[in-house]
Length: 109
Image (tube, rainbow, N blue to C red):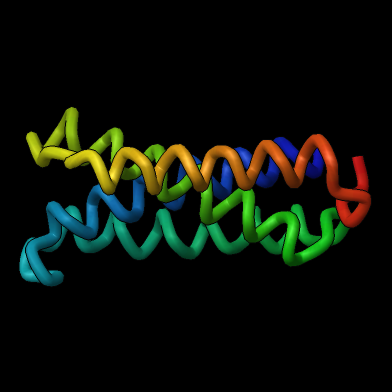
């Protein structure tokens, strides 16, 4: 269940970030409301994941996947581009999360 909570937190963080862009600095009501609700709910699920996943490990996964998936969403929905350094950075983030999952003894699986 802990990884379900973490997955929901990641999804809601991506929703919140996407609608934050659409809120145009909190000047549009509906996207602003979706942003706040998504982030509050995201932290609710993240807090439940932290009951059984170490903070550093959970945060690395949450932030890493959030960055990668938000970058992909920005390309698809907002037609923003990623240059080579951005793609390399994303690959390094994914590599870090994989290394933590496979080799770290800090994580409780």
